[in-house]
Length: 158
Image (spheres, rainbow, N blue to C red):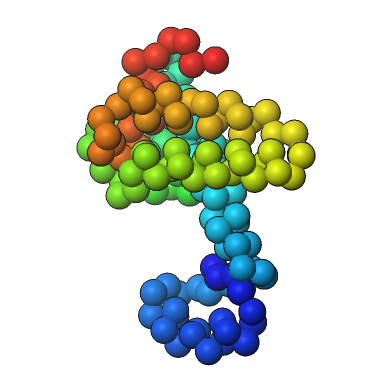
């Protein structure tokens, strides 16, 4: 995704196309930054929901690998369930490749965008708060998948 003048984007498209398969012109300068933050909010909320559901499933002695399969074959499927649960959370490697600190930063950006827009977003506030508390509780280099590890040690996450 890239913001700016369409002519400028077309001029640099050959270079940008080497960095990724899809290039979406998002509009004015700054629009891509906003869309990235909001996109990462949707991902973070999905990973948070998947992590909480996994903890509940485990609390009911349900098999985490089978639960992951059920999610990915059902309406609960999202990019976090497809690319993070079986690969990094179930085996407890927690090395998905994106820092929790960067996710928390993007969520703060999304929260700022919400405030500028004036549109109420209570789930965004809850999500941002949980990720911020995880950032404070976990090591500085923690991966974003460690939100699960944070949640499993907390009982006051509401």
